[in-house]
Amino acid sequence: MIKYKRILLTGASGALGRVLRQSLPTVTATLRLTDRESIEPDSEHEEATVCDLADRNAVMDLTRDVDAIVHMGGMALENTFDTIVQSNIIGLYNIFEGARRNGVKRVIWASSVHAIGYYKRTETIEPDCLTRPDSLYGVSKVYGEAIAQYYYDKFSLESVSIRIGSCVPKPLDWRMLTTWLSYPDLQHLIERCLTVPKVDHTILYGVSKNDETFWDNTKASHIGYRPKDNAEIYRAEIEANVARPDPGDPIIAYQGGPFVAAGHFEDP
Ligand SMILES: NC(=O)c1ccc[n+]([C@@H]2O[C@H](COP(=O)([O-])OP(=O)(O)OC[C@H]3O[C@@H](n4cnc5c(N)ncnc54)[C@H](O)[C@@H]3O)[C@@H](O)[C@H]2O)c1
Image (cartoon, rainbow, N blue to C red; front, side, top):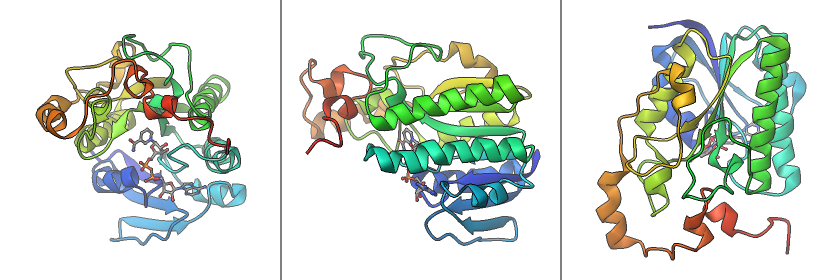
């Protein structure tokens, strides 16, 4: 199943980067890890470079001699506009531009539910819906999807934009009974994105096989993503421990949940 000589994993010190560091050796001979936090190789199959994604020259070096990129690095929550710009706007551009200049075949990267957070939970949406970001963070993910589409249309650089729901070890609240993505399902999804013959630029929802859903991935069925986990097994635990929100509360009424409920980050 080893398909690639070298894959670059960004955000390798982060939560999802650490999960993917475990599974990616099944598809690549060498895993190049990077983060701005310190990181060390664990075996002769790993390389590690500390670098800021906003440093264009460093990212040009980082993306050299790489076949595919799994891009998990970036600001993973709402923050100031300037912080988001450095990591998610400039950083993401550098990754795609490095991929183009260095002939990388495919970029798989983490978009987010917050690109479409203003849809109500009563609506079922597909990957090609109008984006409705719920935060500056969500806006940066919409920008990332636009960059991915642009690089595919203009340069035929293939990519997958995964609108990840809530990727945590287990669902923690009522909303996550719908948005949860388990770690094993994330690992399987990334492996599919890397190994299917053709992805063009695909957008899909990163979500487990939960009974409750507001996302329809039918248009991304060519990825062959077959999630196995279901948040429903945690329902009793959540019912016992987490107060049920009022159905009209934005925290549960909108797909973006707490990001919709929050004010504008830069306001005092
Ligand atoms: N975990 C989730 O539920 C979830 C949901 C939706 C989207 N995502 C996206 O998935 C990706 C990974 O999320 P995570 O939960 O692992 O977040 P995380 O914060 O744990 O990891 C992100 C990593 O990126 C690194 N990073 C940030 N800015 C950087 C920069 N300028 N240069 C170099 N490294 C930088 C951080 O040091 C960190 O290690 C993020 O892009 C996030 O937006 C995650």
